[in-house]
Length: 85
Image 1 (spheres, rainbow, N blue to C red):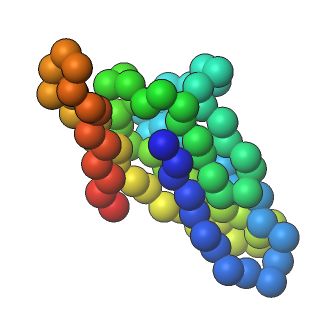
Image 2 (image 1 turned 30 degrees about the vertical axis):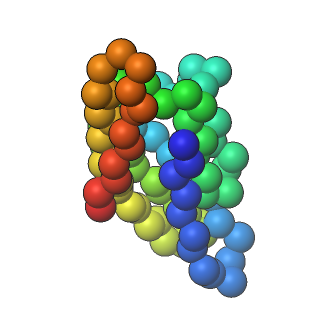
């Protein structure tokens, strides 16, 4: 599962993802590429929540949030992943 931010600016930009609840994105399943993409491998129920993407061009800071909902229907059923802004 991938969350991404596409920001058009002529300035070099630093982009970081974090959870709004402060939970770390340090598990081996979370990878922030530093260019606007957060990859969560094998999304699980505990990955649900509000994610914040913060981009800075050294002058301005831009913030965007997304809510990730994960629903599991039961044994043998596929996990559903839902986003809202």
